[in-house]
Length: 405
Ligand SMILES: Cc1cc2nc3c(=O)[nH]c(=O)nc-3n(C[C@H](O)[C@H](O)[C@H](O)COP(=O)(O)OP(=O)(O)OC[C@H]3O[C@@H](n4cnc5c(N)ncnc54)[C@H](O)[C@@H]3O)c2cc1C
Image (cartoon, rainbow, N blue to C red; front, side):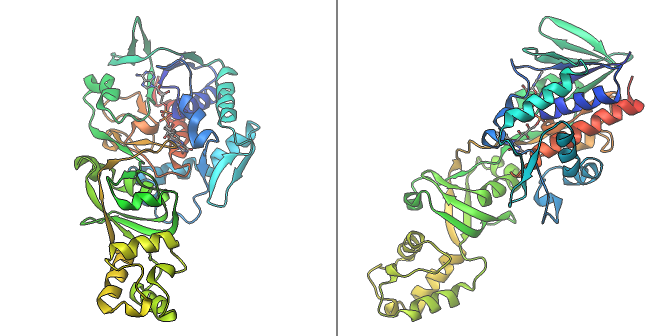
């Protein structure tokens, strides 16, 4: 009888074990979990609602969604994509809804429904779940692997590592003896703090659409921007933090953020039209339709123009400064800010280490990797969980197809 260890009872590990149990009812599967409860992270995903996938509508370039791992995901999604996730969940009795922004949630809006569904899919075929059992080593044997944990060890024919992301290198240290190539883990999906910047007084303002970039680089993103009491957040910023995760980490999160508040407009014509339409009004009492009045007043002040001046009194230099700020308003990023909704790791086991079709280690036959432990991560929107389902599904299929045991 084939014995398989799955290490990490998160999204990828549970999905992998559930599929393997279905494909190979005779296989003895042990799912190791370091913490007291399996799927603890899934329980809090999507603010407790679990944004479990995305319809990928409008996604033309997968690398804009998966800054790391796009080419592997392109191939893998053909085998198990969002429609398959949808079908799998429906088959288990979970009804799903796709929002207007293409994010997919359970109709119940309850992440615990996904947790219960996965646990049921494991319990039914008798997958053994060992909680409070952190694996400390995986040692190659002449046939298979010895898996060690505190106070015990056991041999397995195949092992799937699904230990998730870990922005600290220590989370991967149990793999050190295997000498696998790792991409240094660094955090992704965070907001930016802008120390002492007056823009923070505009906390709560939502501006859409904006284009953001890091000065002197090609990292850019667009979407909605939210001004917070510590700096800037919102989808545009989170995407930029993901695209530039490694660049920013290497610079201790110190960089210059450039904001284009008018990505769809010709800034100078826009300023002219605004000021010429109401020459007698105060500059501070008008504002372009696409910009909140408070933000416009902030930019007027930043351009060095007194708010009590009349529009007609703003000369060519002032207009140029305003137009410039509309498209190139810069801020000093001082570090990472808070983002309680989602947070993932950029980096992990290098994709060079695995066969992209099976996710099996090239050096260690019978050893597989799935989920965020791999150097695969995405922007927000359900793409990270889809990567966990897809890779978990692939690894299970490869083991069942006889690549191990
Ligand atoms: C607050 C929050 C909200 C999120 N919301 C969303 C969302 O709505 N949509 C989305 O797509 N993504 C979301 N994400 C990201 C998503 O949750 C992860 O990308 C996904 O859970 C990764 O799955 P995984 O199975 O690879 O890792 P995990 O889900 O992290 O699971 C790994 C498991 O392995 C265990 N483990 C680690 N080391 C060991 C060891 N040595 N021995 C035994 N067990 C071990 C861990 O305890 C953990 O249970 C969110 C993330 C966070 C933090």
